Image (cartoon, rainbow, N blue to C red; front, top):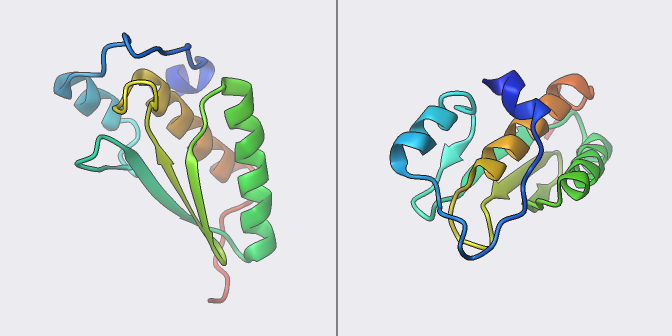
Length: 120
């Protein structure tokens, strides 16, 4: 399903879009288990890059992905650590779009050379 999610695209949501129900969330979370689900119905994950320049490069890459999907995460950069928080703003909850974007961010991190040990 991870591959299936990365090949899909985010669909426009409105306030009438139904949020995912817990069984749907749990099923999708099995494929994005590196992401935490907060009690506020958000996906959160922190990535570590080798250095600050790699962290900024990763953020820029994700910005292009997010823009292409028209689904934008909240991003926090702390030196070489980048934290993404994803939720569907229109419903203030989780939708399938959030899991699609999460898998695409995972793929970008794994394939883009942004991972690696560095110094704090």
